[in-house]
Length: 104
Image 1: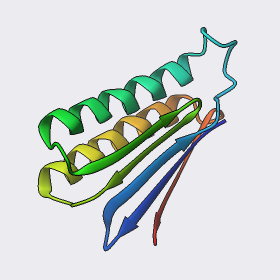
Image 2: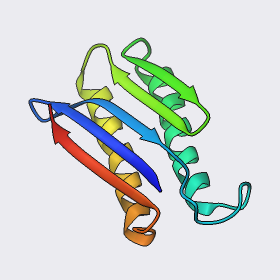
Image 3: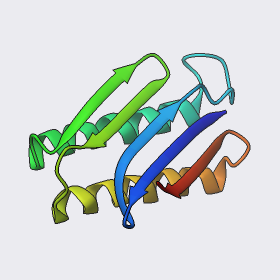
């Protein structure tokens, strides 16, 4: 199961961590993993292009981390948009993706 952990400070996203495999299908055929990868890598590219230097990215096998260095309205809006996309995916594939959104 893909796990998404969202950490907030004063209701603003400070970190999004995504890890593990969905197990929906075999590697290379897993639509849930492909969707999560597309959303997360696309958002890292958007953040890097539209609001450079505001986030730190970590990308490894079955692991993505986006951490804000400095929050601004654009960065926060993009991260909230990413979370909406992941929640939309979760609505269709709730057995394969879980989202934990918490204040730290």
